[in-house]
Structure formats: C-alpha cells, structure tokens
Image (cartoon, rainbow, N blue to C red; front, top):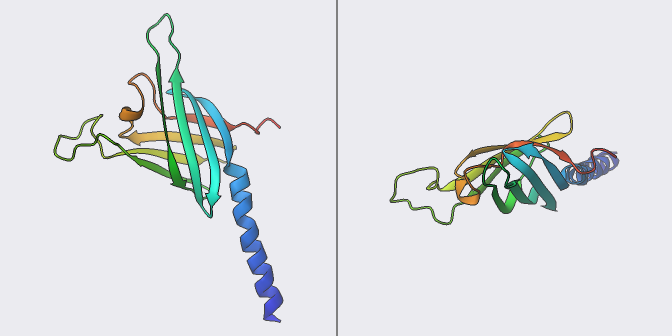
Length: 144
C-alpha cells in the first residue's frame, strides 16, 4: 500500500527538477546598467552554469563600456546569489571598488516571468565604470 504512494512521491520529486531547469535555463536579455545578456545552462540538481555580459556602446555622448563574468550558481525557484572571486584581490590592501574579494550578483525570478539582476558589489574588476550587471531581463522564449 505504501509502495505506490512512495513511488508517486518519488516520480513527482524527480519531475520537479527538470521543470525548474527548463523554466530558467536559456538566454536572457534586457537593459539596466547597459545592455545585459545572461545565459543559464542546467548542470545538475540546483546548479547552473552562468554567463553575464554587459555593454554600453560608444556614442556621441562618450565612451562605451563592456564586461562579463561566468561561473556556476545555485538557484531555487526564487533565484540565488552568484559569487565569483576577484583574481586581483589583495587582502593586505584597503577594500575599494576594485579591491573586493568577491563580485556578487543577486538573481531574482519575478512572478511576471522576468529576471532581475542586482550587482551587490565587487564587480568593477569585470566591467568598466560606465556599465554594470544590474537590470531587468526577459527570457528569449518569453514572446512565444
């Protein structure tokens, strides 16, 4: 009697992970502190490979800016925080915009289907001063 119930629960639990992966993985794009693109690829369980890029094109108003960072992030259905260690971090030097141990970017999946990225700090090493990783993105399949 308990085996069918246990089997149903197991199938239900195993079925939930691919749904989350299918929902969030793929290409995201939008605007914020530049034109932002973000790619998520499901690795296993709640781990995703992530790549975030930002660009502000050169214009008559001034110079442009570009940058990017990639790694792995743990995500839930609500989102997660992406951390990447800054290669040039000097623990003996004063903490500044360029000298922070980690670049941190918060990812929030919103009810309207968008993804909000919020640069928490330490990411200046990965992009210029005229752009950043904060913005509101939509999934490339959102219009389908």
